[in-house]
Amino acid sequence: MPRQHHLKHNAKKILFITSGQPSLNPRLVKEADALADAGYTVTVLYMYWNKWGVAFDKELIATKKWTAICIGGEPQHTANQYLASRIIFKVARLVSRKTKGRFMADIAAARASYYLIREAKKHTADLYIGHNLGALPAVVRAAKANNRPCGFDAEDFHRYENSNDDNNDEVILKISIENKYIPQLNYFTTSSLQIAEAYSKIFEDLKPVVLLNVFPKSNFTVIDNDGPLRLFWFSQTIGPNRGLDDIISALQILNKADFELHLLGDISTSSKDFIDELKNSGVNIKFHAPIPPDEIIPFANQFDIGLALENKVPVNRDICLTNKIFTYMQAGLAIIASDTTAQRYFIAKNPTIGQIYTGKDSQAVAVIISNYYKKPALLTAAKNEALRLGHEKYNWEVESVKFLKLVEETLSTSNS
Image 1 (cartoon, rainbow, N blue to C red):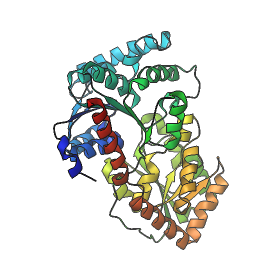
Image 2: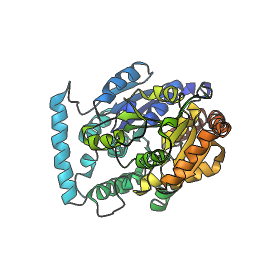
Image 3: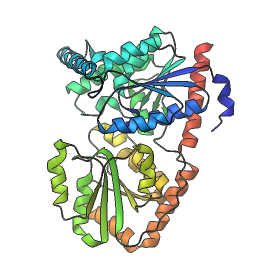
Image 4: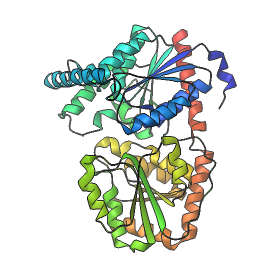
């Protein structure tokens, strides 16, 4: 990373705003780290999202060069403000829904949007950067209030995150927010080429920069395991409609003793029935509680195959390229991926790291898994290739150069 090149920017202040928590947003953390390491003064405004992330936030923030401030309250220590934010949010959602996004959409964007907007305006920064759509109104309004530039990172194709139906209340709200604020941004980044293309079709003057969901280069080597073939999948939560059904059906076809399926994530009460189904499936499944984000790659290194099981509906899932594939690559795992548009494109460019399966074809998935089990050399080759490409090409050391250049250009343009 060209750190010395950026030391002249010591006095520049960057304000990140997110409607999530730092420990649940690796992209924001990597960007904040890159700017702090390059000599910028970095502050992050964030809001409470879930209970298990709070302890991870505390551990994470304590190690960083940047400052983080929780806005809008949280249930344990600032319960009154948290309750107030929920009431404001519910009223705003109701008004926005009744008016088709014409009124109070900014406040309805996220649970603490009202407080994020109010707090962000108080911070004088040289650049305002948003992550998650709930932060977009706050970013633009704070930047305009202080007459400074702003950028936004679209990790997802937000308007179609929940549904493809333009009459859906959530879609109407998000379209309203995007149409109002995206044209006012000074820069716009996305996590996949396909998301960049989707936004470019809507906003003709937009020039998205693609920053892949990659991680810093790891120092791991490929581990060849004896015994059962170990498959690994992780997410913030373990639940239905995540593609796990495909793998379960495939493993039910195969010999149980030959395979282990390891699932990492939070199990909510709403997913109890689904978890019971998994436990009763006859598949050898091992559940793992959430761990801090920077421990996932070391944890994954013990397994053989990483599973990227995205669905095609809604459209966002079809065109997003999540951090799963890049996590597996730094951990030295072979990859089995569902054939979404983004994943099919990526595996086609990097065919040596794993394989794509089509549709809901559990038999095809079973064949892929079985081949890796029966042909250890094939598995080892894929694992080594994934790690090699992770170290040579798909890592944050490469992507951070693009990000730092983008920030520098945005600041330079705004000062000219």
